[in-house]
Length: 373
Image (cartoon, rainbow, N blue to C red; front, side, top):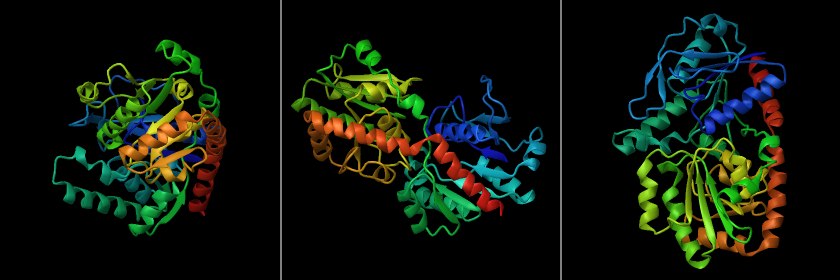
């Protein structure tokens, strides 16, 4: 089968959507299928993968690392004609091109709903109530043109159903490479940062952005630190605004207890080093980092929200209310109880085993086959 994936983001960008595409591409290719990626061109980046088609692009006005693709497909149109499936990752820009080609060449169109777009409209400098309403309208209209919509979690599927999306909706989470995330070298991290075995370590990994609710996490950590002073927090991920977190950390007097790690290509080692993975985002569709952390045997404390509640079940971690008090108390409860933490660690690994790349890619292939009938 020849599968064309249309996406606004791919390498060198690092985020959950890119991780999802990479995992799907790996799983499909290991099953003998040809996967073609159509994505904006990054002038200084050279691909080392096969079948990557870069579309001419311009800089995104407010985000330097992102690119806006232009409708110039003359070098790839012959390949697009030969595709069996067109699978888009977004409902706009590359998603619009995907829809156009699906229409003119009579190809099935599959759409993965990666993002709760209305929760990211703060990046658009317009009146937010109108922007959110318009965003929901765009997503709904686009989804209803597709042969199938992929929801990364059951809770997101429920949201899409409530939005009256009429297309078939199938839940398929993103798969992870268990060989990578299940075998962390945790000792390297504690040694690097001089954190002793008896000291407690909390880790967050992901984008450091407003919608990830990091300020809440720092507020909660300040409360935790007041009660358990022998505790550290690591924030692993690239920051959108460089001084934003530094100012908050100084304001809360957390300079000696919080590490701003930045992006890491070996994030599994940070998961493995942690006593707990802490997650404060309320805008997730799946929360891929939760599964990655669980594969390393790290229990989770996360705010109860869509995406999270599909994964965290009280046996592999706890969900907390969107409350500093409740979140802090749940973290302290697990930190103080070694036996509970060990049980949760074992259960976390069991949960992650259901999210292998091979399992998820097989499910996606079933969707492709169903829309080709």
